[in-house]
Image (cartoon, rainbow, N blue to C red; front, side, top):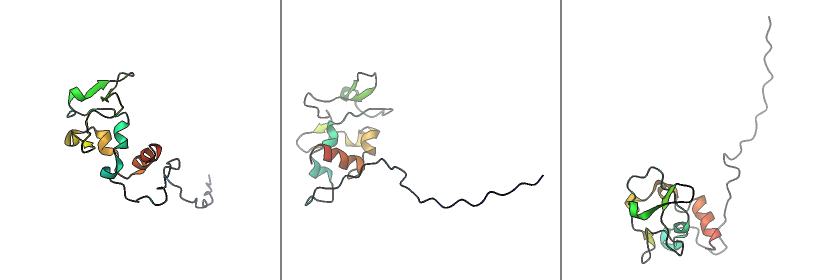
Length: 118
């Protein structure tokens, strides 16, 4: 039996690994650098799931409507761990993993700031 080789494939152009990732441009005249101190903590109004985080204080968590553990939020929507005087996390060294993964100035951060009008 004789096997024939397939003809070589034409090279395909490389595409972004995440083609649906939105790119949020900074408003004209805005600083390109995003820092937590200039942000006013938009991310601290997002729901934060606590998955396998042993160091988050129990009194700062709640069971959400779907049975998962989440950071408790105050009546105005802010995370209970947010220090309102400094706009910084009061449990920074014990913060949930999802907060650790939320990169300052990253795509998620910029999108959240954009949605908040900042």
